[in-house]
Length: 124
Image (tube, rainbow, N blue to C red):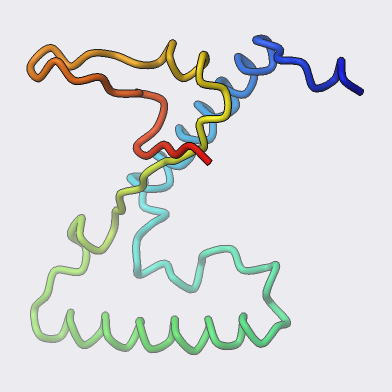
């Protein structure tokens, strides 16, 4: 219905809180050891367990394990942040510009405006 499609700021607030929770989980995974490349086989693949893609992934993961063992053998520290943590970035489409405007700030050093709601925004 037309009423169901009306802008509702409470929906945006709820979406903001859900997004914040999702980002907090991603941060925990990215820095808490889950992103460690040595855990490649432990990453949840239940959704592709019995598929061709899952089989290819397991073969790929086995090759990565072999490579990690070789790197350890030649003295590479595979426990360093390079192998155990990752960066991630967020993006979304600016569908409701007035909401984005509320998250726009001026950089005090350059005088340029930046939307602080994501790393990358697009208008489509």
